[in-house]
Length: 120
Image (cartoon, rainbow, N blue to C red; front, side):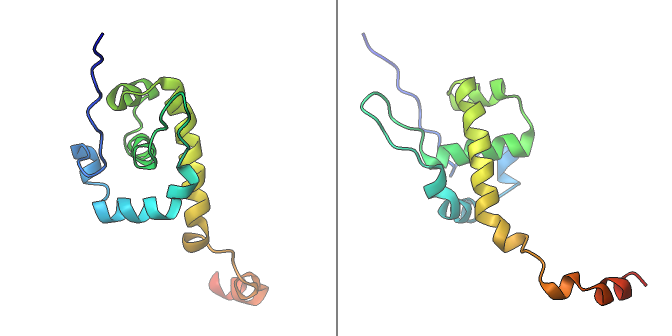
């Protein structure tokens, strides 16, 4: 019995919707930052979904708001797989980027004198 192989889904050739949202350089930068957090190990029974595909799935959901069913069919994975990938990758994105883009305010920024003068 012959089984059809899935065609590779690569982030280098995203759909038109995603082409407008990020470049390959931005995708690679984000993957470098969070790749280790979202990568899973292969087992004797199955091959894991690569970090690139996990990130592509999450970005597609965040960009389009498509249903899990639609995303599952376009990436050829199960709906339950999508429902576990998206929260994991979103948490990894948050953990990987929060320090750079949302730093904790320093004492100067919380001082009452500065907040009163800024409101006037």
